[in-house]
Image (cartoon, rainbow, N blue to C red):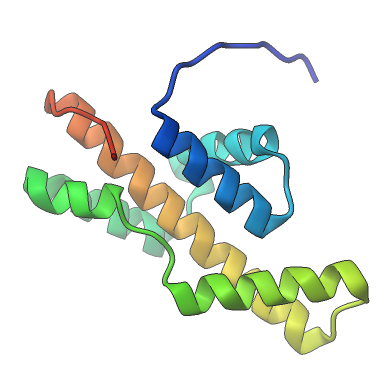
Length: 133
């Protein structure tokens, strides 16, 4: 795979959130950024229908509602569950039930990322500031 490098300045608070998310997921920040961009830049044919419907519905929201989506996160209970299963995965082979739950949680994480990315894109299209501080 051919790669390219790009230097991007981001607010310190956003970088801190990236570091926290990467630590929770046991991933380097670089990998998390790449995965987030891949999720955010999926082609329409790569996004499940139910998520496409949610993303399309964002277009009808006002700026304040879009900002709320852009600043949203996976709920704390699910974040903690994801962290527990990832910790278990690092220690032993997951049971079938745990592996299924991991897929569900990763899918939810991806859904949240796609919604956030689309909300940010719509705000940018509307000329709104993108700072999340």
